[in-house]
Length: 149
Image (cartoon, rainbow, N blue to C red; front, side, top):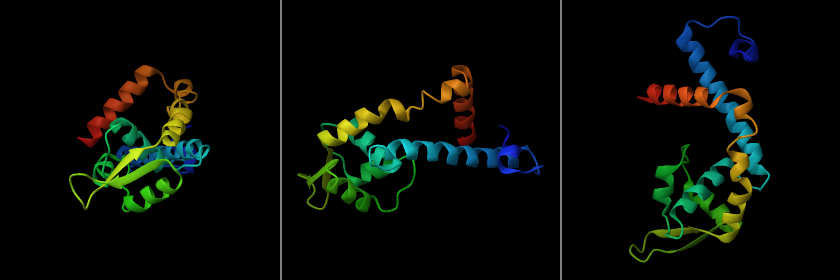
């Protein structure tokens, strides 16, 4: 469906304006879809992102700063989110051997199991291939990379 029909706008000032609104609208649509999928396992999309980062580091530990630097969306208070994940048993925390001020984080078996349960669903293979071809997906990714410079 065209963005004009989705948001009930008859005209944009120019194509760059239309493109900007379309990107924002589509971001929110994808974000909402992924949040719903993550919630099936009792986590948020940001928590899913943290678990994926920790799985990529596994079995090596990670720090809050490493996680913050690799997050797809900015998270001002990563410490509080990690606290919630520790209390859910998804992440374990221990004092860093090298820096007494730093804390090492490692994904737990429960965290790995949640990722295993969500991995396929979060790729949106049930949705995206029905709407755009692989070639269109590559073109879109190329254009988005170009947009960011």
